[in-house]
Image (cartoon, rainbow, N blue to C red; front, side):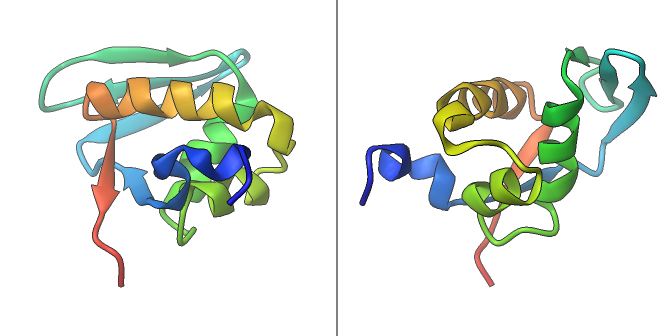
Length: 96
């Protein structure tokens, strides 16, 4: 396992919550959770691309790869995804 794969989230499957709507914006997107009424700004289009790729990807690492994120930047994206998970914007999926 490489240092980049040391974070267990990279091997997990996540998806955008069904209760969340993403509204595209010039800076990235607004994420609104209809259940808890939280509003989150996704300030980079690349993060929006990762979030959108989560549901189609087996793991977070796959979503990052699919979105074209260089491996050296993965820790920053995992940190952002953890923030989205803490506010229930994204949810962990059970492995198939």
